[in-house]
Amino acid sequence: MIYIIYIALGFMILGLFFASFRFIKGPTAGDRMVALDTLTTILVAGLVVLAYIFQRFIYLDVALVYAVLGFIGVIVIARYLEGAL
Amino acid sequence: MNTAYDIIGAILILIGSIFLFLGGLGIFRMPDVYNRLQAGTKATTLGGMSTILGIGFLMVEDYWGWLVKAIIIVIFIAFSNPISSHALARAMYKRKHYPLIMSKDENMDAYREVADKNQNKEETI
Amino acid sequence: MKELTFNVKFSRFLLNWLFLMVVWVAFTTSFSSQELVVGLVVTMIISLLSISMFTCCTPAILCPRRIFFMIWYLFVFIGALIMSNLDVARRVLTPSLPINPGIVKIKTKLTTNFSKMVLANSITLTPGTLTVDIVDDTLYIHWIDVKTTNPEEAFKEIAEQFEKILLKIF
Image (tube, rainbow over all chains, first blue to last red; front, side, top):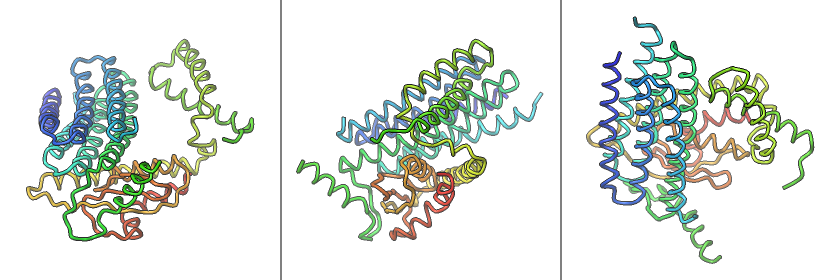
C-alpha cells in the first residue's frame, strides 16, 4: 500500500515542478497567480497525503487552513490586479 | 489484508495524482492566461478532490473522522477553486490582456464591447 | 433594504442554526456532550448575529422533491467534471495543442444571485468553458474550442443541462 502512496507523491512532485517553472518564468503577473493557485491545490493534496504517512489526524487541519489562506490570498491579489482595492 | 476500502482508496489516490500532474503540465504548455486557467482549474480540482477522498477511504476503518474531514476539504476545494479562477480571469480582462484568438471570425470576443463600455463609464465618473 | 417580518427572520435563524450545527459536528468529529453543548451555544450566537447576511435560501429548500433534484444535480455535475478532465488531459497530452479559443455570451433565465453563482461555478468546471463575467442575466464565457458564436446555440451546448435542474431547485 505504501508504494502506491510513494508513486502518487512522485506524480505530485512532477506537477509541482512544472507549475513552479511557470511561476518563475510567467510573462505577466496573472500567469504567476494562475501558477500559485495550482501550486496551492497540489500542496493541499500533498499535505493530506503527508498526514496519512505520519498517521496524524491533526495534520488534516493544517491542510484545511492552508487551503483557506491560499484562496483568500488569490482573491485579494486578483482584486488588486483589477484595480478595485 | 486488503479490504474494499483500501482498494477504493488506492485507486482514487492514483487517479487523483495523475490529474494533479496533468494540471501542472497544462499550466506549463498552454499559450495564454485563459487557457492556462482552464487546464489548471479543472485538472487540479478533480485531482485534489480524488486524492483527498482516497486518503479518507484508506483511514476510515481507524477513525471515521478522517473521511468526514476529508469531505469538508473536498467541498471547500470544489467551491473555492472556480471562484478564484473566475476572479483571476476577470481581473486579467480588466487589465486589457485580451485572449488569444486563432480563427478569423469577427464575433469571437463577445466581451470586448462590454469591457470597453465599462471602462469609458469609469473614466467619465 | 426593506424590513423583514418576524417569521422570515425566525425561519432564517433556524435554518442557519441547523446548517452551522452540521458544520460544527463535522469539524469536531465527536458526539461527546461537552462539544455538543458548546457547539449549540456558539452556533446560536453566530446565527443570531448573521440573520441579514445569509440570504441564499429559504426553509422551502428542505422539502424532499428539491433534495432529490439536488442529489440528481450532484450526479450530473460529477459526470460533467470527469468528462471535462478527460478533455483537458487529451488536449494537454496531444503534441499539437488542439485549441481554438474565444469568448461567447449566453443568456440565463435564473434570477437569484446564489443560483447564478452555482450555475457559473458549474460552467467553469464543465468541458472547455470558463466564466469570465456575469452582467445581469448575461454570462460571458471563455470557450477553449469555439463551435458556435450564436448565443442560443452556445446556451444549448454549454448550460442547458444544468439550468433545467437549477430552475426546479430554486
